[in-house]
Length: 435
Image (tube, rainbow, N blue to C red):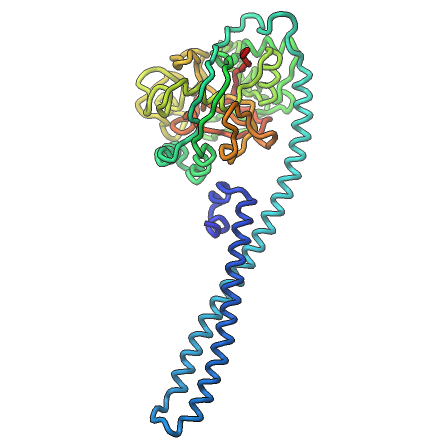
């Protein structure tokens, strides 16, 4: 496993922490060193014993009829020497390779640490900007014309992918990813182990935040989004895929028509970063949901792969990559299903899940409050987990119009830099409920 991590395509390296890999490499180096030392010991004794046997043979040879014994002894000695020399050479090469790899891992850790410190400094700067967005004053915390939130009951649920579901999840991932199947095992491992989580009651927006709602926030706060500050966003272009495009913003998602001029006021806002989403929720007197809250609300008490069942939908339940997306993608994500739109649809266009929440699956992926850690489930608290205290990526959940199979499963975890903004990511807000 260790050598596959060193020489392979990097999948195993991603699936294990650098600290674990270095510990395993040091252990293997010790084993190789012991093997090399033992081979030297064997060589020493072979030489000593062969000389003793040859001396004894010469002393007794005049009285023995066998004349080719020294030649046989020399052949055996030569084979042992060659075998031990090969073992020693292999051990030295492996130890040197492991030593160099450990140095590289340490250097990467140092670089990653420096990058994380820079990212944290940048994060603090952005969070200060978010904190400067005032919360609503007065008795009400809900902006005008805001739809009432849905009360989500507290409870305990199984979070993540169980071992018995791994094979199915890997196959779903391969069907969807195709040219990037090597990342599937890591995606699956990040959602393991399956574990029980208990959540207190909370409230969640029934719909994704729309362009119209976001516009009220922008007008009230004279707010400038990350895309507007930096001048670009990722947009989907047929035949070219995702491309960084100048002039693409939440108001002009394709760097073209205005969302209001093109009758998309009730579509989910897109091309918004995590900071934009957090700022809006703060202004609205709310917060972003944790990823545990999002998965719990997405499942809505169901035990199947998706809240509607285990396979492709047989009714209009979500906007995903399906038959209608065929002209824009190389393959159909979910054959036999047609949601009628290619990119985003007006919020609430499809059936609500059992909790009364719309578009928890598909339409746009949604920012959550948590930092991403591929090993977090190994140490996650059982009650009200809120994710790591820091990190490089924020988690999006739910999948989008461009996702299918694995990407829209309630267990799928996607980490993105918080400044990322694209045509497939939006958000909704949550709120604590009095206990």
